Image (cartoon, rainbow, N blue to C red; front, top):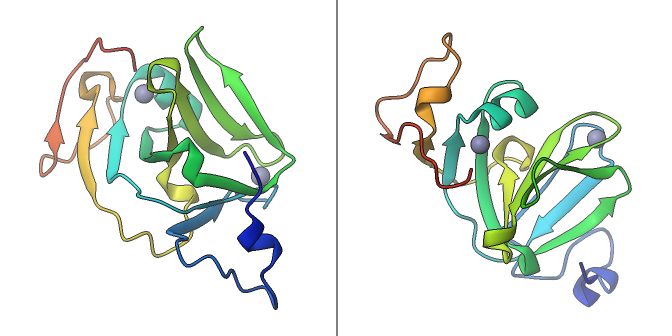
Length: 152
Ligand SMILES: [Zn+2]
Ligand SMILES: [Zn+2]
């Protein structure tokens, strides 16, 4: 990611880039990011890889990769789950942070819980609901799909 000259020229800790939409990071602060463009509303993914990696399910917003800048990424590591899908996590605190897929190369999914509050986002969709753990209470107020073989 290219660094943003607006951030380098900020003073007194105040970002001068008016387009910053959101900031976020992991629990230990080893990864800190900011997003300067549109954020998609939140999608829950209950697929088995997301369930095991997050410990429950993925609740992710998404942004253009070109809109994501890192203030700190020293502890960011990637788990290449398949040839085309990888998860980003913090190697210090273990936080789930990102998900990327080769067929959506311009986008990055961002674990919603890592965003600083308030996010201003809404949960709009659940996918792979059939793979949710048996203890999980699915939310019947949001649009929900079962097992979807589209590559998640
Ligand atoms: Zn961390
Ligand atoms: Zn998933």
